[in-house]
Structure formats: C-alpha cells, structure tokens
Image (cartoon, rainbow, N blue to C red; front, side, top):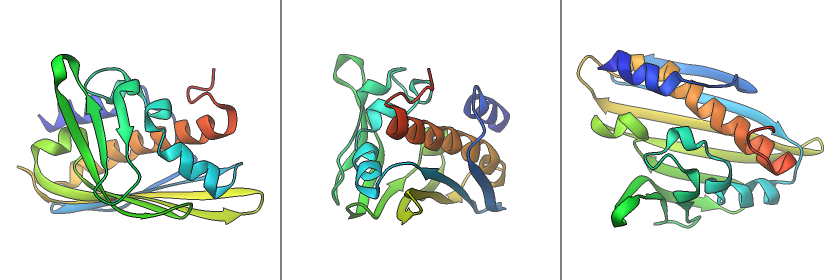
Length: 177
C-alpha cells in the first residue's frame, strides 16, 4: 500500500525551488521547501488564502482545485467541496499572523488514513525585492511499517505546490502556461 501511495503522490511533479527532507524516521518526518517570490509578503499571504487558484487539481479528491478553500483565521479550514454535498477537511488553521505566518494542522491526502498528524507552516519574510517563503511540514504518529517512507513523496508534492504558488503570485498562472 505504501508503494501505491508513494506513486500516487509522486506523479507529475516539478522540481521545487529549494527542497529537503530534513528528517525521516519511523515515527515521523519533516520536509522543508523554500522559494523566493517576486512580490510583497502581503501579496503572497493573500494568494495563500486563494488556494483554489494555485493548488494542483491532481492533488484533490474532487479533481478540481476550484473546490478548495482556505479561511485564514484561527479555527479556519483548508477544506474541499465534493459532489452531492460531501466535503473534506484537509487541515485546520491554528495560527495566523497576516503577511508573516500561516500554520495549519492535520494530515494531507493519504496521510489522513494513518494515526498521525502534522503541522504545515508558511513563513513569509521580506527579502531583497520580494518575499522568501519557507514551507515546512512536520508529521508524526503511527502508520503500519512507520512514517519514514512518506517523507520524499510528500516533499515532492509540497514542492510542486510551492512552485505553483510562486508562479501564481508572479504571473497569475500557476501552471506556467
């Protein structure tokens, strides 16, 4: 099953600007992505909240990122509308500092079927003529056989999403077309 999850997570991904699996162990992992975005922290922060505009439809349950929403306030939800009135809560918002930091809690995609949880953080810092975005995802808990094998495919998926966010902010087109 883990191999199938890794294959699904790894399909069609672009190389991130700067990526790393920081740590990977049976009990969990940490991944980190970085990108320099040619925009102000306020512009990047606003775009994070427009997640349905830049997140890849390939990494949704509905196969349409326009069904995604992200309410940038504590208690808010990174949620997805499904057909026939269904819905998915991907992550919950636990900490927001406008133009500086967004932290979400929960398990993305196939990780939701494990006994684990994580923290996805977007950290924004004005740098040079733009914004340095550092995205981290720390995840831990129980999965049969351990969590370590999830790190690399999760890193690839999040790297692709950060690339899409960067392109969306800079060009208005997350797919680069």
